[in-house]
Amino acid sequence: MSKMRVAVVGAGICGLVSAYALAKAGVEVVLYEKEEYLGGHAKTVSFDGVDFDLGFMLWNSIFCPKIDTESRTTKIIDVCLM
Image (cartoon, rainbow, N blue to C red; front, top):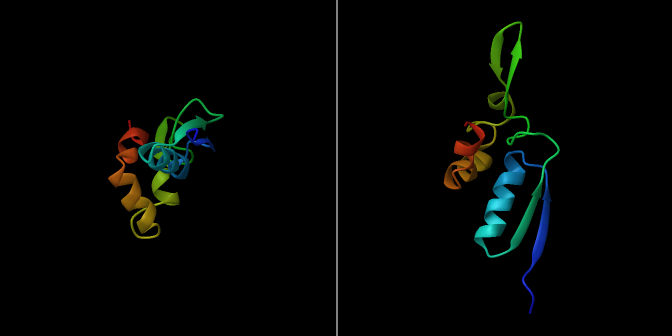
Protein backbone atom coordinates (compact mmCIF):
# COMPACT_ATOMS: atom_id res chain seq x y z
CA MET A 1 0.00 0.00 0.00
CA SER A 2 1.36 3.45 -0.91
CA LYS A 3 1.91 6.18 1.64
CA MET A 4 -0.91 8.73 1.93
CA ARG A 5 -0.10 12.18 0.49
CA VAL A 6 -1.93 15.32 1.59
CA ALA A 7 -1.71 18.96 0.48
CA VAL A 8 -2.38 21.56 3.16
CA VAL A 9 -3.28 24.96 1.73
CA GLY A 10 -2.38 27.87 3.97
CA ALA A 11 0.32 28.16 6.62
CA GLY A 12 -1.76 29.96 9.20
CA ILE A 13 -2.00 28.45 12.65
CA CYS A 14 -4.56 25.83 11.58
CA GLY A 15 -2.61 24.83 8.48
CA LEU A 16 0.64 24.55 10.43
CA VAL A 17 -0.91 22.45 13.20
CA SER A 18 -2.70 20.25 10.64
CA ALA A 19 0.48 19.69 8.62
CA TYR A 20 2.43 18.88 11.78
CA ALA A 21 -0.18 16.40 13.05
CA LEU A 22 -0.42 14.68 9.66
CA ALA A 23 3.36 14.42 9.29
CA LYS A 24 3.67 13.07 12.82
CA ALA A 25 1.11 10.39 11.88
CA GLY A 26 3.29 9.32 8.95
CA VAL A 27 1.44 11.13 6.17
CA GLU A 28 3.49 12.78 3.41
CA VAL A 29 2.53 16.47 3.60
CA VAL A 30 3.07 19.37 1.22
CA LEU A 31 2.28 22.77 2.73
CA TYR A 32 1.35 25.62 0.36
CA GLU A 33 1.39 29.28 1.39
CA LYS A 34 0.99 32.32 -0.86
CA GLU A 35 2.76 34.74 1.49
CA GLU A 36 6.49 34.87 2.22
CA TYR A 37 5.93 34.24 5.94
CA LEU A 38 4.27 31.63 8.14
CA GLY A 39 1.50 32.25 10.65
CA GLY A 40 -1.30 33.70 8.54
CA HIS A 41 -3.06 36.47 10.45
CA ALA A 42 -0.75 35.97 13.44
CA LYS A 43 1.73 38.58 12.33
CA THR A 44 3.20 41.97 13.14
CA VAL A 45 2.41 45.01 10.98
CA SER A 46 3.92 48.48 11.11
CA PHE A 47 1.86 51.65 10.93
CA ASP A 48 3.56 55.05 11.11
CA GLY A 49 6.65 53.45 12.66
CA VAL A 50 4.72 51.59 15.36
CA ASP A 51 4.59 47.77 15.37
CA PHE A 52 1.27 46.04 16.08
CA ASP A 53 0.95 42.32 16.84
CA LEU A 54 -2.28 41.05 15.29
CA GLY A 55 -2.26 37.38 16.28
CA PHE A 56 -3.66 37.89 19.78
CA MET A 57 -6.81 39.45 18.31
CA LEU A 58 -7.57 36.34 16.28
CA TRP A 59 -6.73 33.45 18.59
CA ASN A 60 -5.82 33.23 22.23
CA SER A 61 -6.26 30.86 25.14
CA ILE A 62 -9.59 32.38 26.20
CA PHE A 63 -11.44 32.40 22.88
CA CYS A 64 -9.62 29.51 21.17
CA PRO A 65 -8.40 27.14 23.89
CA LYS A 66 -8.08 24.13 21.55
CA ILE A 67 -5.95 26.01 19.03
CA ASP A 68 -3.84 27.45 21.85
CA THR A 69 -3.26 24.00 23.36
CA GLU A 70 -2.42 22.38 20.00
CA SER A 71 -0.09 25.19 18.94
CA ARG A 72 1.85 24.91 22.21
CA THR A 73 1.88 21.09 22.13
CA THR A 74 3.26 21.04 18.59
CA LYS A 75 5.61 23.98 19.23
CA ILE A 76 4.04 25.73 16.23
CA ILE A 77 3.68 28.88 18.30
CA ASP A 78 7.48 29.09 18.50
CA VAL A 79 7.70 29.04 14.70
CA CYS A 80 5.09 31.78 14.27
CA LEU A 81 6.70 34.09 16.81
CA MET A 82 10.24 33.91 15.41
